Amino acid sequence: MEQVLASRSVSITELKRSPSAVLEQAGSEPVAVLNHNRPAAYLLSPHVYEAMLERLKADLRQSIQEGIDSGPAVAADQVFAELNARYAEPGSKPATKPSGKRKA
Image 1 (cartoon, rainbow, N blue to C red):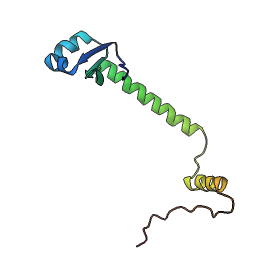
Image 2 (cartoon, one colour):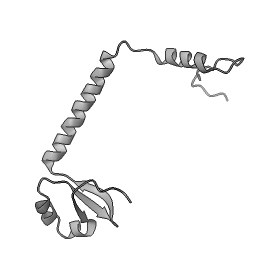
Image 3 (cartoon, helix red, strand yellow):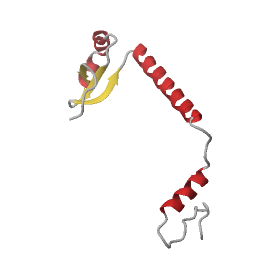
Image 4 (cartoon, rainbow, N blue to C red):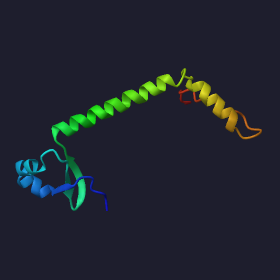
């Protein structure tokens, strides 16, 4: 059974019957919307949703900055050439990069 990641839950039927009441009772708390006792969706207040988006943006910006700070970029062709050289079977030809063109 899937884990319900909210302290409040409501069935889809109950939500359809009285969406305003569900939102009012939830306040700022997230609500798990269940379909056959399994989470189908989560309802979040606008404040919580905005805070989540801001956190995701901050985490993304931090990850991008960490990548920039980690040093100069390395060309993909160089990385693949090094991997092919390192992991080639003894006595085999080095793998070549596909040209992208199909043979007729």
